Length: 135
Image (cartoon, rainbow, N blue to C red; front, side, top):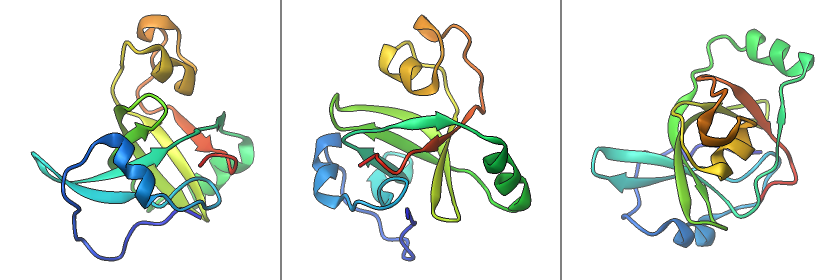
């Protein structure tokens, strides 16, 4: 189960890999952490290994059922490469959903969201499910 901290306290700026110290293994990913950035306080989802899958019909029904859920802007931090990507995320019924926000030229980003090389086929707002095997 991934959850957002109940307090609004931000952590001090740090390198993406430093996030490993804050990681907690939970169903569907890790607990998002907040940290201070130039534009205020940003939520960061850090993963050493990220496994995702496309939405299934049941996922679509869950998202529609929770129509009041807002996808929050965040940084997706991949610790294996120290790359960060701007995305949106939501946690619904202990499952983390990622939504594409900005196209990146990185192959790693294309592989995660299943876009073609160099951002070909990019779809803003594509939603993926974070698999429980992610940590």
